[in-house]
Image (cartoon, rainbow, N blue to C red; front, side, top):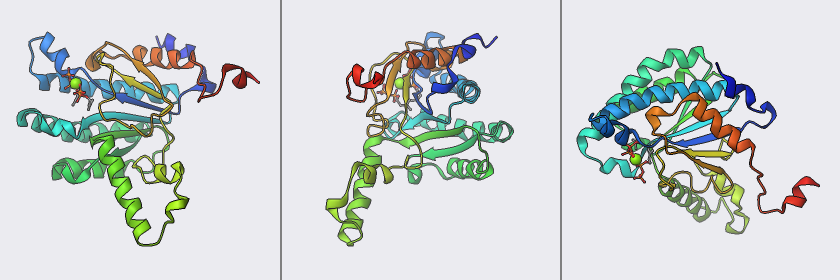
Length: 248
Ligand code: IPE
Ligand code: IPE
Ligand code: MG
């Protein structure tokens, strides 16, 4: 059944896969359904792809669930999405624990509705000791927000004399990002076909392999996920070097 899974080279699985989960609205529109029904279906895909990532041996799965800019969508859609997050976290927490999945979250917590934030914090606490996949939800997240926050904190430390500006390296900047405890994404997937990054992990994707599929997020299957990993494994990551240097 999981034939594509068997084709994955276990010694070269991307440690961190980040996904821009896009296309819920268009999926619903094509079926003359409300956009929010696309988001409901999208939650099933989150569950499915979390299982697939665990099965493939991925260590970190970061899902872009709600951007800073998404706060400007119609209130009805924002409210429905936040409500959906509460329901999904409540429903899925027992299975996350059973499957040894730890939940983490990046984003501007202060803008999240209190009920959703409380649920998320509870789930993070309940799964804190899980040692399998780390599932990171990017919620109320944008990369420019994150970088701005990092710059503000570094500047404050410098002003207080705790950091010497001359000692700031790219490792310092990484350490001030909300992803400080994670490796950079090896693979960035975008569903829904649009060829843009939409303010997601701009600093961290410097050398990520990018995989874009026209498939809408609600239709994205385990095999689609494994296909992305197989494509990743067929690429040569040169990190600025020449091909000859890599094979030496
Ligand atoms: C992605 O699907 C989910 C969120 C941004 C919350 P969209 O809602 O953006 O769906 P499309 O892109 O309009 O089809
Ligand atoms: C990106 O999707 C954000 C998330 C998937 C949460 P959008 O639908 O918001 O991005 P744009 O507007 O197409 O760039
Ligand atoms: Mg979209």
